Each structure stands twice: as C-alpha cells, then as structure tokens.
Amino acid sequence: MIGVTCVLALLTWLLLNGLNFNSVRYDRQLQALGDFTRFERAMTREVLTARVGLSRNYDKLVQMTDAYDDALTRLRETPGLNAEETRAIDVLSARALRQEDLVERFKSRNALLQNSFAYFGLFSDKLAESDQRALVTAASALAAAMLRLTLDTSDVVARQVQGRLEELALVQTPPQDMDSVRALLMHGEMLHDLLPDIDTIVKTLVAESNNREQDAVLALITRRQLASRASARRVRLLQFMTSLLLLCGVVYFGLLLHRRAVTLRRRAAFEHVMAGISMRFIDSSRERITADVETALQQLAGCIGADRAYFVGATGTTTSTYRWSRDGIAFEPGWPDRALSLAPRFDSGEGGIVYIPKVKAAHPDDTMNLLEDAGVGGWLCVTAVRGHRDEILGFDTVPAGALAYWSEVSLFRMAFDAIGNAIRRVRLEGEKERLQASLQQARRMETLGTFASGIAHNFNNIVGAILGYAEIAEARIRSGGRPAGSLAEIRRAGERARELVEQILGFGRRGEGRRERVCVRTLIDETRSLLAASLPSHVQFEVNESAEEATVMGEPAQLQQVI
Image 1 (tube, rainbow, N blue to C red):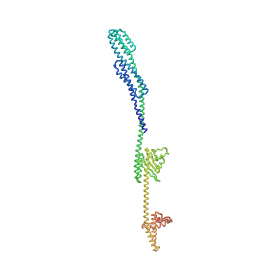
Image 2: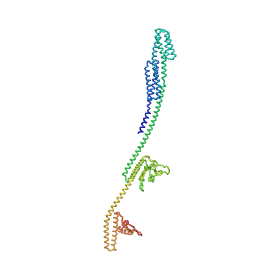
Image 3: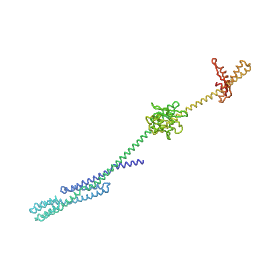
Image 4: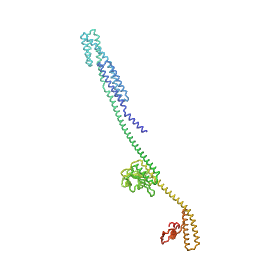
C-alpha cells in the first residue's frame, strides 16, 4: 500500500510539473509588457499629434496614459516574480513615471501654446491691416520668424524671433494699434519661450520611448520561460521514462500473472486427471488393474509431453512392471526394469523426485550415459520418500525432444501414491482372497473330517462285527483247509479296515497316527493280495521286487494307501 501511494504521489508530481502552469504566468507577463510598449508608443504618437495641432483635446491621450498605467500594474502584480525581475520592473516604472510627467508638462504647455498661437494669429492679422507700413512690415517679419520657430526651435531661430520682437517693440505705433501690438508682443514672447520648451519635452519623450528597459524585462521573462519549458521538458521526459518503467512493470506482472494462470490451469487440469484416476482406482479389480494403470500412465504422460511412462514395483523377488508408450515408440531392452536400480544413483532431493528436462552426458563416466543408452531424452522419476523404496514412477521422452518444463512436478507424487496404493490394494485384496479360499478349504476339510469321523465310528462297528464273526467261524472249522484260509483273509482284511478306520478317525482328530517298523516286502505282498481280490478278472497285476530287504518307520495303513 505504501508503494502504491508513493507511485501515485510521484505521478501526480510529474503531472503537475509536466503541465507547466507557469506558461500562463509568462504569457500574462508578455502580454502586459507588450501592452506597455504599445500604449507607450501610442501615447508618444498622440503627443506628436497634439504638437502639430491635429488633436483638439487630450481625451485619447488620457485613455492611453491610463492603459499605460494599467499594463505596468499588471506587469508588477504578476505572481512569482524574482528579485531580478522586480528590479527590472522598478526601472521600467521609474521611466514610466518620467514619461507621464513629461506628458503632463506637455499637455499644460501645449494648451498655452495653442492658445498663444490663436491670439498671435489674430493680432498678426489685425496689424497686417494697419495703415502704418513700418508696423505691418515688423509684424509680418515677426510672423515669418515665428513660423520658422515652429519648425526649428534652435537657438539661432529663437534669437531671430527675439530680434523681431524687439524691432516690433521699437516701431512707432498709432494709438489705435497699441493694444494689438502689446498683445502680439506678449503672445510672441510666450511662444518664444513655449516652443523650445515643448520641443524639448517632445524630444525627451521620444528619446525616453526606447525599448531598452522593456528588452531587459523581456529578456528576464524569456529566460525564465525557456528555463521553465526546459524543466517541463525534463519532467515530461522523466514522466515518459517513469511511464515506460510502469508499463514494463505492468507487462512483467502481467506475464507473471499469465504464467501463474497457466500454472493454475495446468494444476487444475492435473488435479482433474488425478481425480479421474483416483475414481477409476476405487473400483479397480485384479483383472482391470493393468489396464487402469496403463490408462493412468497415458493421461499423466500427456500432462508433460512424455513419450513413455511406466510404474515399476518389486515385491520380494517378483517385479511388477506397468508401461505405456506412444505409437511407434518402443522401450529399449531391459528398460524400464533397470530404472528401479538406476534411480538411487541420481540426486532426488527431499521430494524424492529426479527431474532431468534434457538428458546430456558431460563426460564418458557420467551416469547420464545410462539414460542415453536407454533412449531417454528427458526423464522424470518419482521415488518413494519413505517406505516402499522398491517402487518408481517414470516418464521418458525419446532423444528427439526434451521433457516439457513444469514447475509443479511435485504433483506427480500424488500420482505415484495413487498408483502405488492401488496396486498394493489390489495385491492385498488378491492375498485376502487367497487366504479366504484357504480358510474355506480348511473349513471344508474340517467338516469332511467331522463327517468322516462319524462314518468311521459306524464303519468301525461293522468291521468289529465282521472280525468277531470271522473269529467265531474260524474257531468252529478245521484249520489248514480252504475255508480256514478264506476266513484268515477275511480277518486280515478286517484288521486292515480297522486300521483304515483308525486313520480316518486320526484325520478327523488331526493327530498323528501310531508308527512302527514295517517290512516293505511284507507290506507289498499284503497289498497285492488285497488288490488282486478287488481287481476285475481282465486286469493283470504285476509287482517287480528287489532282492534287498527294506524296513521303514510308519503307519502300516497309511503306507498301504500310498502303495
């Protein structure tokens, strides 16, 4: 907020200084100075006009004097005057006072002059009608000399006028013309004094009406105006440079915002992909896990422009590999299985992510050579940070291009965890199903044992009856005969049946049977006799016996079942 306030203050200051408000003041000064010079010249012109008698009154001269004073007042009251300008205007004011004083003197004397001229002409005309020739001649000579004095007020002409006045005073004047001569002499004397004085005033007025003081003031005003314009130009240049800097700043921050927006869009797209992958893995089964992982790898590879993607996990001695590649791009032999052992050789940092946008070996012993041998141009490998360190998620580009730069590569750890968790979940579900099947089998075997135990008890009763009746019959017949042999076989089969029943009962109890030393040959002979009696007549039964006697430890009934 403070920075924004400072920038606004700087721009406001540059704006106010760049507008150059002083130009209006300088324009007013120049206008007032111009009016002062113009009215001064007009005032001098009116004085000359009045001097030659073309102006009958001084109204216009008074207007010019008032305008002259007003221009000087406006010039003096201009705000922002410095000491040098004030001194120059004071000099100009002093000259203006002298000019106005000269004008006032001119007005008073010129009024007398015009009045004297009128009376001088009147009395000259009257004397010109006189009968006395000397008087007429003296009056005419005075009038001619006075005419020259009006045109030339030099001392020579003034002395000539003075001489004509004296000559007229010496002429014998008749009584009737005496008053006219005295009046003519009086006005002639007055004109003799006024004409040089008025011409001196006019000459002084004209001489004073130069532009020396105005030029000095004008030079000061112009210098300050040029300095102000130069300062305004510098301020405008600074304002332009500041605007360029602000524009560059706006463009820079715009690019940052655009880059941030692109990053956010890519992150949103990636999170959308991750959401789809996670939703797919929720319902993934053991039959579909391979297809789902390959689809997830394809979608993730599209986020960074990878050509190949894979997930490799090792469980004990078993390695599970899921892979995807673009059409026309194959995996090198042994890749990506070798990536599982290659990833720890690169610095993955705290995030467990190896990110190499473009693979390029620096020397022959560089580990990058192993990636180049596998046809990897760019590599992104996500390894486990803790636990399950035998799993990696990798993305490759072929040497024709480099892996697209993306600062949010850490988001691929989400993909790594999602895929790894899904595979482990499916593996655990498979193990659960196997254990459940084993449990069901064990339960079936337990049920079968219980059922077999029940049958064995009943069958044991039957076998007991058979053995009992066989012993009774055997006791009632003569030994050595054929019936006695048959009864012996019946009794022996019954005993084997009893042993089988005990074995079934032992299976139901899940205990170990009774073990004893058994002769293998004798066991084979008994089994042969039992099988010979139970086989059909068209089946021949042959036994190949060895000459060696063999004795084993075991349960005779179980060994007989094996045979």
